[in-house]
Image 1: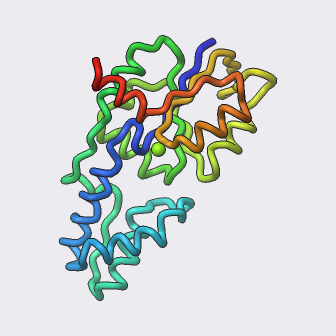
Image 2 (image 1 turned 90 degrees about the horizontal axis):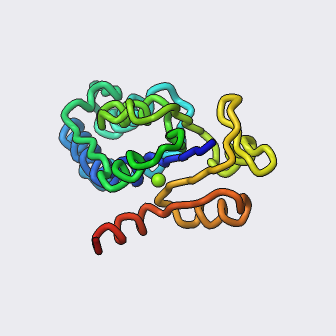
Length: 190
Ligand SMILES: [Mg+2]
């Protein structure tokens, strides 16, 4: 059985663009500089266990700006969520079971997938609030990976984080890895 584990940020989604838009959005709402927003973001980015991360983020910005408005994930309607078409076409060509494999806030990650309008491409979504490497370790069963009681022996991980992929290569030699950066640059030469 074939399995494709696909990262979300900077793999499926052009997260850099999303973040820039998010900082601009809040900069307008709270009348703060994008650098101020960025600083709050850097402090908060690992507090993933909250229900609505955007709401928590906006509460912090509210304190900084002395305003009373709050925003939730559902208020991000005017923002663009641009998928990486090279990654989408790669996974469309694959006949493997396709599972989103992402580290982040559950509500926000699902919202991103929904806004990119690509939810129908996947068989499953796994969002972890701890290191992906540990989760992968817990899914390991010999030289196979278990996802919701199903065992896979032909596994590919696609991600933009080369140091994560290097660790996957050394800890799980039976897993194939695809670096998004190489996927994009190799497509450019076609
Ligand atoms: Mg990523």
